[in-house]
Image (tube, rainbow, N blue to C red; front, top):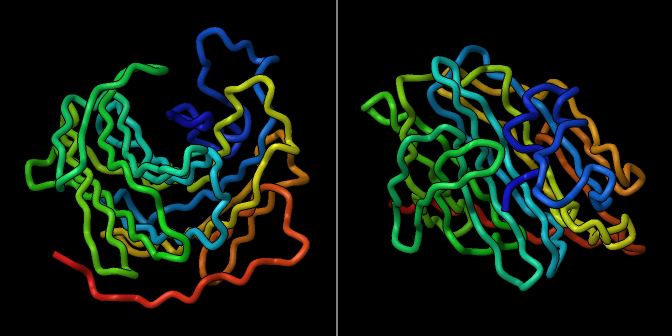
Length: 264
């Protein structure tokens, strides 16, 4: 399951209009789903970043994807890191890097494998559903070798830490400071029968990102071209709040969150 935003979307214009082509599905046959984007930048090209993510309203048994994409400087590679809810009630945390050379799994229950979609690369995954109201800190960091990049999920609510794995590039790189985009995608767009009315309501808070070069700052936000009446993105002091789907008549109350210490 890969995002329509994909590795092609590394500018406000591109992310709003470019999609990964799926074999057998013509452009005119793509389903209609809402989605939105919040771009942010770092002070200089970093070698690590952390972004907090809190699912404030869960869409239920629905295919939704929240992630941050980025591009590498120094090698031809790009990737994204986030999590999904699935229609069958499951979910997944995943990191994918196009032109990744190898992938090594991390904590128990994680796995890495190659993929071939709009190019080739490596992906590391953990089959777990994100929990409502939990504050997840997703960290991408270059390892001491200079070519490996490790993807870690820290659940600040429980204190648990899960390393998805390490993906190796062909050479030493940094992260392009202006390439970061945090987005929401309802990926049933790849079903041509999907219409806007099928969307379920969700609300995601992408918190203030941090990098080893300093704090990240949100610079721009926009919506997907379809179902814009069901999409809203608001940037404020707490970060970027992305809402999609029909709003409930009575707004749900976000769950209380208790922040715990990080596990080892």
